[in-house]
Length: 301
Image (tube, rainbow, N blue to C red; front, side):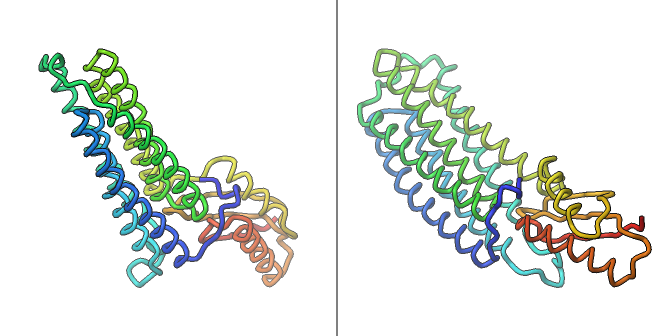
């Protein structure tokens, strides 16, 4: 998370509307694509394409999870959640990673069982339709990756970012399917099944990466060093600040909480000291839209 990259600050309502709209596009696109790939895989006798269709179908479920998570995360603070609900977006990303992992392992298990059973010689050679479906899938899923990633960065959404990489993993798995199908048509039918194993690896890796990112945000991990240095520089540049004694940050869903201790003239009045703290508070929140809350403590010089 690098808020110094000028992430656009949006309201909770804008955040919810944007994430919901992007997820709706993903659901429709994945539903149509998975049906197309499933039919192509069955008609062209391609196990790799059927596996790829299952992967796309899992994307439909993941987008629904994103919508639910974002809607909860966008709720205003209440009596029982005074700091808001942003972490529910992390929960959505974790659920998404688990779904992705299960679908990947299922595809890998099915392919490995076929290879180990010694029935590879009986594998049917895939038809041309499977090749066409693979090419279409690569183009569509890569486009969906860039579309979703654009809005994930725009509204700083971890769940959307996870969904974007779900699209990318699907595009990569389709590349594996394309290679396997092409190899099978060239006289090595077993490559179609091997391609399913490659797809499994891509899916599992994506699931692990998404899970690790979500867990980092759930356990109050600090921001990267570059971001903290930038916050420290902004605070230290304010009038009346002698230096920054301490800076602590923690990710809270897609937001950042900051605790900072600054040093100021110990002979200043309470009112003057308060004004210095306010300048630091306002400057940091203005420069870093992802900062939801900052606590400023003043130490006397």
